[in-house]
Amino acid sequence: MGFDEARHLLSRATFGAAPNEIRVVAAMGYEAAVDRLLGAWRGDTVTAPPDWALASEEQLGRALCHWWIEEMLATDQPLVERMTLFWHNHFTSSLDKVPAPALYRQNTLFRREAFGNFAWLLKAVARDPAMLIYLDGALSAARQPNENFARELLELFTLGEGHYGEADVRSAARAFVQDSGQKTFLGQTGHFDGDDILDIVLGHPRTAERVCEKLWREFVSLTPDPAEITRLAAILRDGGYEMKPVLRAMFLSPAFRDPANRGTLIKSPVELLVGSVHLLGLPVPDKTPIARMLQDLGQLPFFPPDVRGWPGGESWITTYTLLLRQQVLHRMIEATTVASMDNAMKRPVEGRSLRDAGNEVALGPTLAGIDGAELMRTLLPRQPIDRVDADGTPGAVVAAAMLDPVYQLK
Image (cartoon, rainbow, N blue to C red; front, side, top):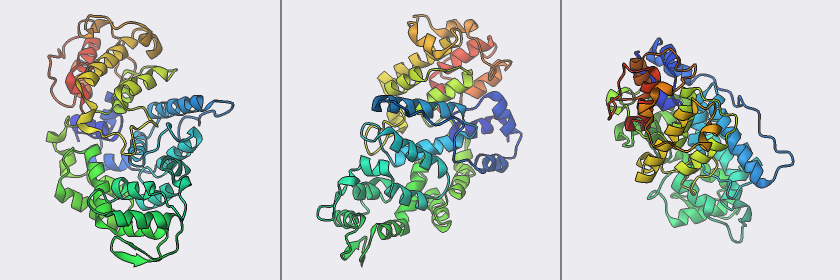
């Protein structure tokens, strides 16, 4: 496959790629490249676990957030981190309510099952301390079962609205507190426990369809193709809910590879910032500036807005966040000349455009020595909206391309 298709695959499946990384993949066959992304993955991280000793709860939360940002920047398996983030947004829990050690253990669970087995992951989440705390499961009792987990299980984690009733929520809530009485759930009657409820939900066709719809919106298009969702859901169900085969089928689908689908999704704040730091080769010894930027842009890891998670899609862009994104990118480009993000954050954003100051941009090893045309193809998934002179200095090309609205897309 060529450079542009390799760039598209890496743009959607990772946090973005430098030219040398794109060229390595471009030299492969397409199926071989997808299989490489989905190859054997580790359940551990490159970065060391956070140091929990003698820290306050606030310090623990900050350390946990900074640690995951570091892992996303340092990882040699970025698709695993993308899927860890996907599961974090599917099975949401938040530091607003859950202690940091419990969320760390939940994060390692999501990484271990990044593209493992959804059925196993769903059952693990049902027993996960972070989820029990977040949805008040610890307060649930047989005489008065709490319905929070049962409701979110049906509405958000599996079937979706319109495919269950209030009686189903009540029956599921009873089952999860080990009420041994007879229950009717999704048309079936029996002395169900929590595992029985999960098995019935996993046997419902909507569960696989909903998971595939969310994957499609994350990686392919905001408008799921009904025929493709039916096909992918069958692969997921028939494969016993193994995720790797359905991910492989999605990445190999004609829709994913269609050039018309390039540059049609908006980068999340995490994708924008982590990808930009990676591309520019910026040293970020202190993760505080990145965390602050992510919070301002609306996607600080471990702090989803509510149980529904980040809505994503077009909601990432408003008149406010678009201006803020430009300012953040302005600071990142400026950081190449002032040694670190920390120094760049301490300086006021100058009134002049970095498009006019691109000769001052100091490119790191990931972009050094690359000509203007390849830099543009690396940074932009489609033609820029504003004029970018590919014959300018490399620094000027990078500055202009990153500040073009098209850079916000993937």
